[in-house]
Length: 312
Image 1: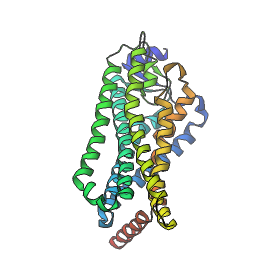
Image 2: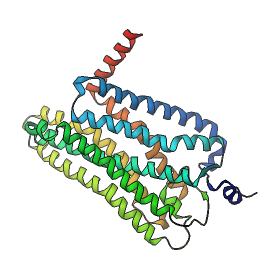
Image 3: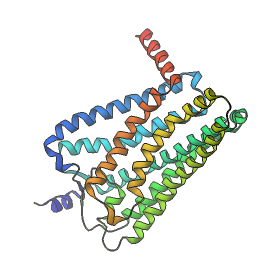
Image 4: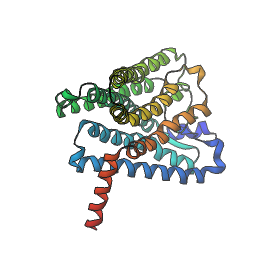
């Protein structure tokens, strides 16, 4: 029985995954599982640290806590299925399961885009308007910004998933390791031009708009830092932004190269590598970047470890 017939019997899709590296699947499985567990542990630690340490009760760490939460959710949408795919190739996924995977992936990914923009705005207010910082970035405003990020993610996820899964599919074999919208467009019957326009249009809103807000925030930050008379003050101000800049570069660099391009330029090997970078590498690196470059996080982690040691 062919793969196409198998998928029809299963009433779903077949995920090819990294079939070209089948000889190394067990090794990749072990490494990926280690990355996944490590990412879960690190991000969970950040959430616990921010929640338990009163010294970190500031908007910056409140946003960082939500970033860590989004990284856990974002990674958990795709990695478990990829781990299954490495053991059972090709792995099957139901149409409903594929739709849910697409929705949550887009939801958490878009929410992270807007949250990174919120974090940039927070740094802009802290550096450019320090005397008004506590008034502007109060708890109520912080919650509204975070909630707005999640709402944007939900709206984009629902829009893309509804439009895509109301289409008719002429194939069920997905040459990818999860249900990503660009790959599914290749399986849609007929002319997909309008679908492509919708994907790029929504991606512009979900990726380019937050990125523009980040750029504008950092233009204001750069001008303010350049006007500081003391070199030490400049260094201290920039150091609070450096981690965020690295994370933004990693996330937006890979995501934009995947979503802001037409269908004819899709290349399964390249697209898999790009998708792997922002579904696995970025969620792992983000908390490491923030924790290694942040003395307050390191100090809070040491205090938490001491509390756990004394409790044991």
